[in-house]
Image (cartoon, rainbow, N blue to C red; front, side, top):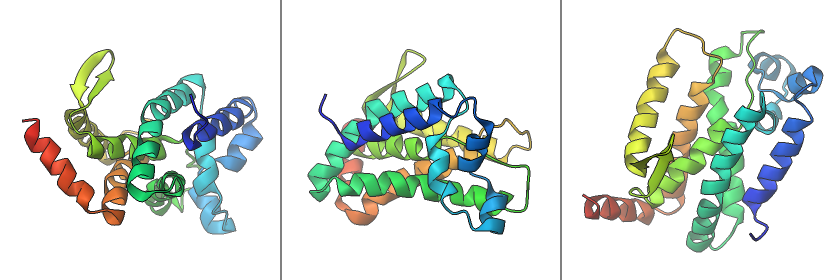
Length: 204
């Protein structure tokens, strides 16, 4: 496999995450901590929080997903925009913007912290759905059309983000990452929307 931006992101994220598993100080320093962003202007947390994960399962799920979908989106963006820089911009902006609603909601809550690249990974998955809505996605070994998976995923994240129960998972980041993944390609190249609709209709 050729060395890609996706692979570089995976390697960096794995190194930082694994070396932070048993280091609570580093985990706290890198996490998305809305209160500290507001009080200390630590805006770097919007990016660094995507480099740390709770455990190997959390890290593995995000990185395996990024491995399977990231290279496709990187290639698609390179073909459409003639530059890999768009993919890097896309990933970094997804990390930042998917956490903005979390920051606004919890900026006065000293105890709230969150970690993980789930917002950016969700953006990558939903960008892939935009390019290939009828591609097969395997969920617990069961194949689902990408577009159906997207509808179920969005419905679930909206429900969970509005739920009063605290699960420890930042569903807001999942939701807004997914929305960003759909909007970013359309902003730069609206014709992708026409391509999406044509594929959607042809697959019915």
